[in-house]
Image (cartoon, rainbow, N blue to C red; front, side, top):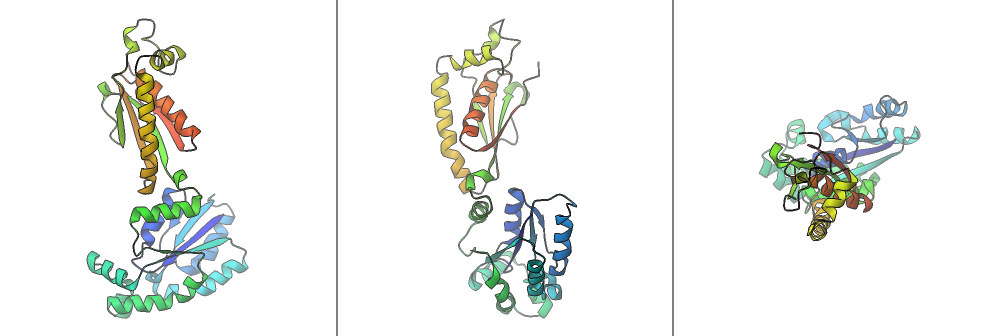
Length: 286
């Protein structure tokens, strides 16, 4: 079991961090009182449910329930629970500005009836010992949500690109485009095997259709430019913290040309180590 305890300053991005961890496969629990962690860890270790990557968020929103965090961390260590602490931080000035911009109240403002500035200082004092124990400290003072996501993906996956799930979808324009697509490529400029009687009943998964499309004039140049654009774009999407990229390849009916090109793109991305899948939406439509 991989357990990440996410804590830190209110307004530093713990919610965004939890979302980022969830996107890379962690089961996330928000606002867990520290005293529940040992029992929760025991439950997971017994395989009920079967989870291998868990992140729990705990912070001063718990009020008095959070005050025993140090004792709970010691108990987890004594039990042999393997956990890491991720501490989200920002400068006091940035935290105060964020609360003013969002017009939200700091949790300690209500709990202790103090101003935002005093609440930030009070919280920093309360979290001093936890911060000292942290395995990872991420300062978000000058960090965007996308940059935070990229940082956490890199920390907990080891390779920032592996956090991006790519889906290649072939489709037919006659049946409508792919609404969720991020990139759409039209391959109707390539010769259409539909007009050859013996090829019409086949699909782009058949060798004869594949050979026809690949050997057609201009296909090589088209595919080279398509792959070049995708190779250039994918790292940029990763840098923006995108967790899923949908690439749609369309022809008239979604049965021949788009299938061949989608398969070529899928093979290229898989060979280069990306987490990629391929789906031929309209291949069985008539």
